[in-house]
Image 1 (spheres, one colour):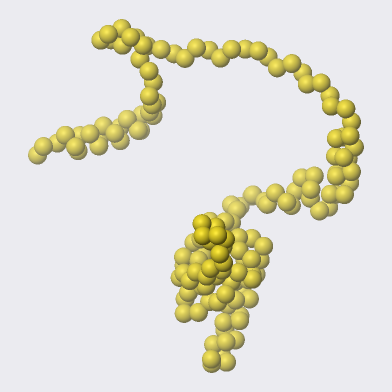
Image 2 (tube, helix red, strand yellow):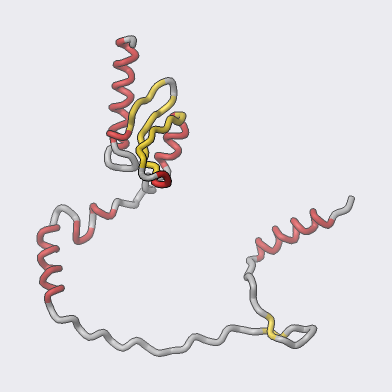
Length: 154
């Protein structure tokens, strides 16, 4: 292999590894990136947990990878809360103390019965009509347009 291509390949893998480290795919699962294709390992759960490799285009790999990234403002659960690294030991000790206490009685829940479902009499037979689906105004407009296209005989 050309030494320049090998160096470029290592740089691209290192660059890609920075963004994949412990996010959606771990570094050891990336096999290669060459000619605009990315090869990675995956576990086929449907066929006895066999380890297989898959080669996809770089665009498809990035599309799949971005499906696993969080939107701006969201954080991964393990980085906050009582299990956050900063005060984990302190919070776990407090949690253990609280769990060792006798459980407190819960306040009684209000016993209200849900209102009966709204029913309408059928204009033809007088029987009870059953709601099959509730539609928004936009859904009604879309469906009526679809029916007009089906019925149009011109």
